[in-house]
Image (cartoon, rainbow, N blue to C red):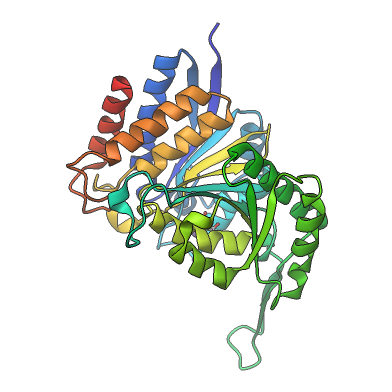
Length: 354
Ligand code: IPM
Ligand code: MN
């Protein structure tokens, strides 16, 4: 009997459903080629569902998802709803409730022509960011007092626990070891200004003793942004806080060609994990069939990799690489001239030719 993977799908808002459609199309063909099965259950949760029903992410859904093999998410966000409400409930809700403490964001340039940096090629942009995913300013400790008055007070706490920092730092050292490239782990923080981040400095050094084969490096986040542009080839594996990881991976997405190609895995090793493109819901392109689904398709290969379907994962990765290197492909933006479904078809065509 072939293996069946149960996947919870939250296609979400804006361009989410159309890029998810293409991602699942590629997943289906890959499964057929490799001889495993996928059983996708679609969940409607997102802004539309919230506007219709007032429901965000109920506990029963979380319970059901916990019993599945993986979660796939398209995009969440809709300008008709209060800023961040549904994103926090669904994306952050899944990250926190499933304790997906790693946000793995590979930054790999797959086609030289998409590099915005003068003189850099695919050889120079190939690193991975391990973003902490359950703490920091995202922990939800904070609020606003005396709102709208001259005495208004607004605050949001950056929360770091030894347990939370240690587990993600250890995962990052293991990642650097597995990559087996520069065998170097870079800690990105702002411990000079944010003294609470001293917990990162100390934990990084202490856990590092278990990894004598991995070189320890450090950069403050402002300098790290500069180095990412100046010398991306010096990066191998990066570990950082939730907020800084969010910010530097948008910068990283541009180095690899744009938001149209950047994918991520929200991971709790060995447990149900969630995979999604890094981009948002791009409401203005909703339903127009112009958005590039490559990032969404790349999230599928990250998912298959985590599920242990390593050879299928690398086939999709190679197919994407082939498609991006086609001479008639000049852009991965909404104005690329390649429609959303055509992108999916091209990846499938490349898969079949591998
Ligand atoms: C991301 C997004 C989210 C984040 C938002 C939508 C809450 O920007 O996944 O990078 O900040 O984590
Ligand atoms: Mn982000």
